[in-house]
Length: 141
Image 1: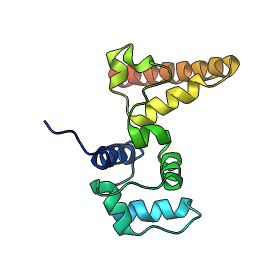
Image 2: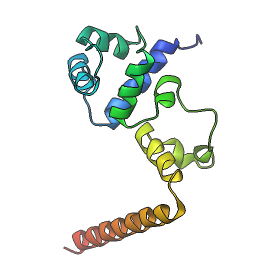
Image 3: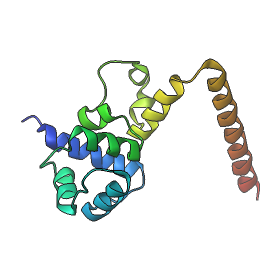
């Protein structure tokens, strides 16, 4: 089996990140949304098409804008799962199912101070309890 060229691997990660962000993988949509966020020279739909088809890689400044827009880390978007840093996701197969946006959210959570982590846990717990209550009410109805 031949290795996947790095441009094609990037295109796959870009399409997954777009999907996770709820953005259609259309060159026109990508170019328009990207240009709203990028203060340099605008890209064309043709450039976005080349990114999506794995025919070209964005420059670093454009990669950073894409990553911020799609709420993923620039390194993960460009190179795939980081080889360094916390290996939380290798500990449990359930974490393998998380998309890039979810993994980035967990990394951001891990970077919070302890008091802020506690607040986030309390909010998530409250939301889970509310969702469970709604589910039970729907089943009883």
